[in-house]
Length: 148
Image 1 (cartoon, rainbow, N blue to C red):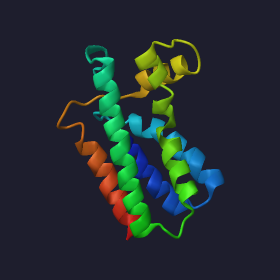
Image 2: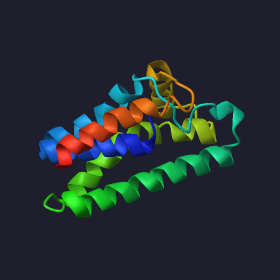
Image 3: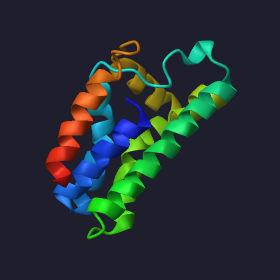
Image 4: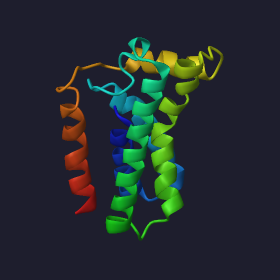
């Protein structure tokens, strides 16, 4: 899934659970659960991309995700602690962040190797444009139900 999808699901988790002790670990676990759904993301085909292109695409995705989360926070969730909401978002992206040193810096040691291997094992790839459809199908109803 894209970082944006992971982030928006984390926002829904934060809004629904509102207890950091439960919501933050669930947001972290949601990364793995979501990645089992067939999807597309910027990391696919990473061996064929330059490291610069991979970094820039990933960075753009993360920036977009934090902009959307910020807008959602101020429009719908300002009653929640912003550190809590953004901790959920960060936790939801953390498994992917821990894979970056393996992909971009060739750091084959732990924990980076572990996160690369587990992500490689659970990812279910789907090419564009169809790989975006499951993400939209997950995020839109979830946010609608959470933020209405």
